[in-house]
Image (cartoon, helix red, strand yellow):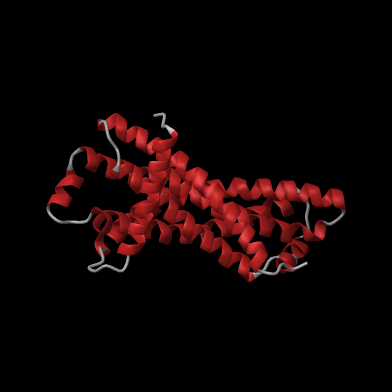
Length: 256
């Protein structure tokens, strides 16, 4: 569906307004505990296995590339530190965000879109029930929590995969690989990655919820909304990742 510049600007403003509504509605009581638990379990169930499987080749590719580069430069002792930095700072939040948006976000968008075209959302509003508070907030919080947990999983699996491919396939030294972990990496890198995952999970859920609640045109409209939510989420994730990384390097002093 093509949009004019005015339409694109209007949708951007509506999306931002919905994000503000979600933030404003977060402290409202009663909190939908049951909906939150159901959504968290659902998002986790559809993303845990794909995330673990995707993080293995990510860690392997990073380890192979860095291992080859460090050998060319004669700095094999830093291969472990470089691999951990690459996985921790960039690979794990990005993999987590892509899986949350691709698996969890599409399901959220399809669910809310189906409710929208069946007029369930309008019926809730007629009854005085706020869809943001009842449906969107639990999904956003569930995506944020699952994203943080998945980021830790990706970090562990990615580092373990990098160790295996660097030590076993490239004949690296296990002691040097493990000893170099703390040479360049620091605990702040982990906290920054977890914060990235938290923000990425919120973005994916908010975009998916917005596209689902504004779906029109029957089942085809729901399918179009799902596709658009994935594309928009990916664009926002990469822009946000660049901004957060630039701010992190300015705020946190790096080891050298």
